[in-house]
Length: 189
Image (cartoon, rainbow, N blue to C red; front, top):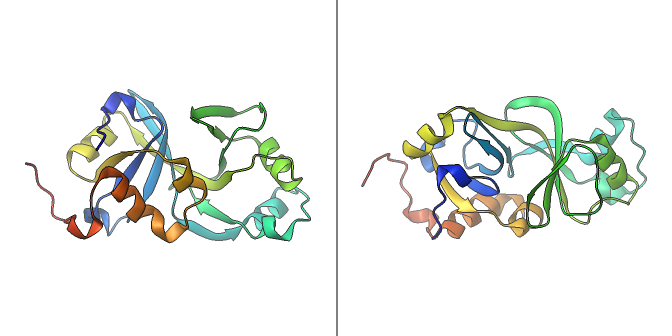
């Protein structure tokens, strides 16, 4: 089991503990994209919006003829700035508004990436979300100390390939736990 220090949370998963069952983050898996001393930003990886990519393309006036592409789900990236779009993707070309997160993993806020995806010229792997999860100074550290979150190494296959309903359980397994043995009771050893 890898344990990450608070200073090195970039490109790791936060996995919601069962104690968060009555919150927006119930069974969430979040990719930490930017962790700084005064703030942290991440994208929730397992909350579908009930919207498909075709609807987003229409709203943004981006033409797309690929029906399979138009049927790909858009996700709730978090409860902050839900009107703002984020694309996690594999490498494909340099685009404005793109930041490298990890090995063959990038985050883009550029409309350009969505246009490329719609035209079939985009990255091979991508994940589209609206909104993000954010924490202020010391807020995430306090939540981790209160046993609200577990931290795990990130995994591009979980982000791009694993079916949505398996992501939380698989992220828990990445840490080395069996989900059946995790209690919702909070405590410290």
